[in-house]
Length: 166
Image 1 (tube, rainbow, N blue to C red):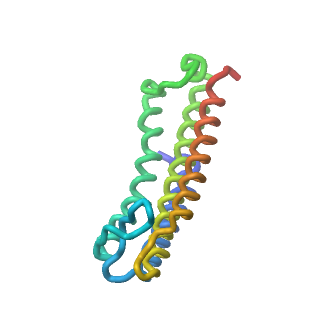
Image 2: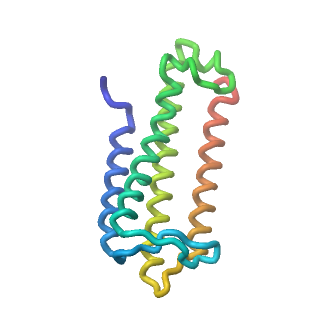
Image 3: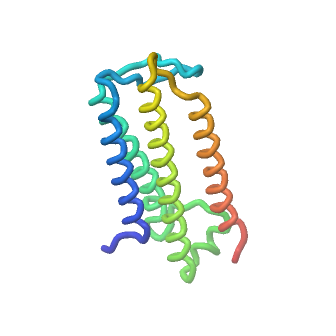
């Protein structure tokens, strides 16, 4: 079975972001401020080793899960797929390109999730350089705005692709 198109690029991105988390976690103190109140004040701590393991699992594992869902729902010829104009888009002559689009679109979202989580990690690294540790509320709000705008565009592209027949 050959790999899905775009999968090597996603795996390379996840490897690079995993390396980023691994290397930048070295700069953290032995006990990491890992949870912050709405005002940015540190209110939760954990050992650096635990923090690194959790962040690696999130930065690599969550996007892999996100990328797997479209593969799972498009299996068996899209039998479990719920899209507008389903019969049209899953007709034999369009089924392969429809499934490829949905799987590729899932990989784009997985990449966005990985980038956002890596950005949050970077904010935590910066927060731990301060005494007392404090998370940039401006930074996290900006990251959330960018992420949700990207999500809105992602959803719009997905909906626009299938709302009408080509």
